[in-house]
Image (tube, rainbow, N blue to C red; front, top):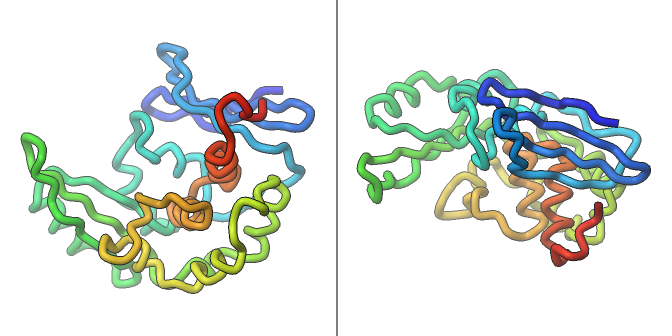
Length: 215
């Protein structure tokens, strides 16, 4: 069985197929039919539903072309908890910051001057911590159902649920974009609003050599 989960205005398609025990979400370029990425995970009866999680959010992971305007208002509209946004003009960045509502926080990274133009990166994040937006137990149950529970430390993850979200976007403390450990990947996925199944696949994939990837 095959179903289209998402088709973007940039011609990117997310197509889900199922077998008896596994699911696969293939990310393809519609025009050329080329496979860009695929996510494979255990077939389960119920996914985790949250206004902060969607395939639209995963589309903005930076692995392919996407509509960058989505990120400008995604946190403000409650579609995700964190957005990393790039500007190529300092005045545009400053104008964006001045329009941010009081219930959001932001962190401006050091300008990237390695290119022909200066690049300004900013992270916008909701107030509070993960525990204010997600049920820790429900998240753990999802990873248990997906067969990933043995690949991360639940006690450590629970501690991270209590940490203010601003901590994770600050270069001097965490910087979610450089997450490596399973617990950090889970935090990053929840902050950026990626489907839990996609993060589960990244954790499962990193624990196996390519020749042992489940079909």
